[in-house]
Image 1: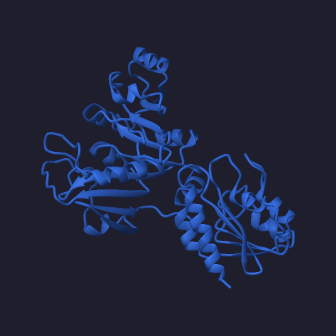
Image 2: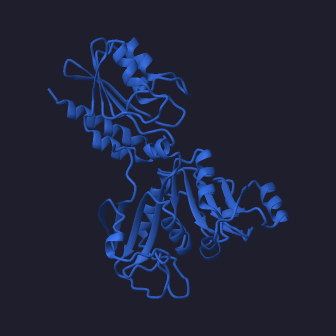
Image 3: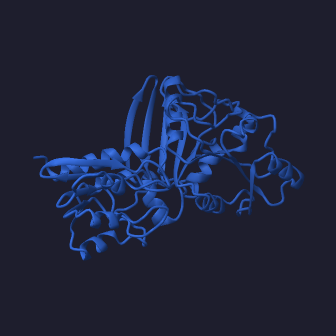
Length: 366
């Protein structure tokens, strides 16, 4: 007979399959076991569709006396779908193993299940389950998108040559990885200089992972070119431009009429777009996971203002570019210890590149 850790690990692995389409919902997997055998299993496929527990228990099977393993506390309220606690009780489940609680104050699943007489065991593989849903936990706890800053640099940490050329620093295999990373997010954000210099599409073009993601441009003076690839591909994924209220009204109307979303925000103390307002607006637009791919100015601003939750740096170990284009120029620390902002990190080797993933903010650990 397999252990409870085996079944919970299976639930977590199933949950991972929902990474492309569940946001801003969490990734959840469910495994139902009876007499030492797996009766049924499922995971949450897509935002707005049935949750993992309900999908798992909807099959025409005898679930009475069975045990259910789920990596997140089941919902007990009606949202886009019915409460999962209802079907757990209805099917006669005798025990539910839950990795960790849901920080959403509307969710009282553990309480409801226990009041109905169902045995609940909490905390199986808690850390692994928490790590899986960092974006969701950030959304619930901080009421903001989970922000990943992705940067490509040379070995000496430069994002472009002295003349500003940055296309392409990374190897072709890393570019495929970038499209996979994009597919795991709800929106991608760059500054207007990236649009003007690189003319990107900012779409997901990896076969099998095609997805419409929001494309966000920071453009304070509304220099967005209508001959750009972004404008020409506006039917593929929506474009959102954040600009200042004082920028060109006539061009705003022209872009709006062309199907582009224009969002006006205030200036911050330095006279540039207020990141606090932008992040709040994106959260209100159901952006649970935001990928920032901007140049040095955008990267520095997000880091300096403490808006980054996770950083991914692609380092081309075969290139040294020199010059001043570093993503950390605005950060100023007096001693090395002040710069210890990465809480944990992983390293991957990919052709002539090294990829470093590091977390700056970690959510869900009390």
